[in-house]
Length: 223
Ligand code: PMT
Image (cartoon, rainbow, N blue to C red; front, side, top):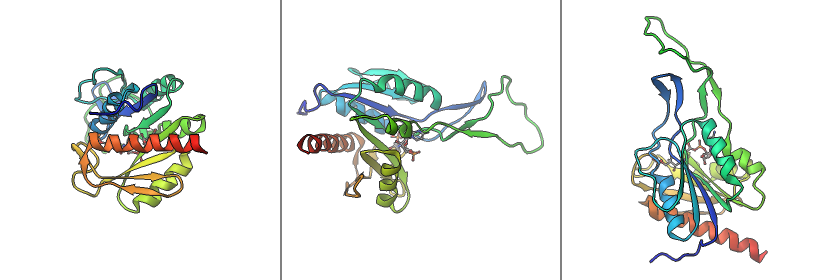
């Protein structure tokens, strides 16, 4: 039985990829399935939190008992996140947001040709970095897909973006990261302390993340 130890807390979660249109029928995206973020949303709901899940396009059904918003692009995700941010005490950004989008979206389907073409891409806003600047006393959790020096890179990200916790996926390991049902992560704190977790189901990883979030909240009250 899950304890209702998050009752009264507002938890905002992002999940899935974003989809950046090139023309009416084509887009750029990535391999995120949404499984990790949806697991965080379900775990927080099961612990009694008020949960808002903002999701890019996935094949998963919206979990019952939470407020759900579907978005497509990084710009739409940013807008939805900023709108829900005010009511949140805890924010967990598990989405794999596209770092770039096509500079222009062609109104017509791009025609086939025989010469090489180049895509012009412009950077998308970094949503979590923006939240880091306005976070007040909210707890802000980011994810990082890493391939080496997991802890050092994640700590650097935490400090640069003003995050309380970075969940570093070791994407070199089998059963970790994109699309699979399990994950292998280290929870990395701002001070460089970290907790290395073994491979486990994403729902179990989600609970370990929320355990860490609650501990951070308690530390804060004690200080
Ligand atoms: O969806 P699944 O198939 O279950 O896979 C889960 C996952 C691997 C996608 C997930 O666990 C994960 O690691 N998500 C973040 C992936 C990533 O590429 O992170 P990043 O290094 O691009 O971004 C770091 C953090 O900044 C993330 O919290 C991200 O949500 C956030 N970000 C990134 C770019 C951007 N423009 N805005 C952001 O807010």
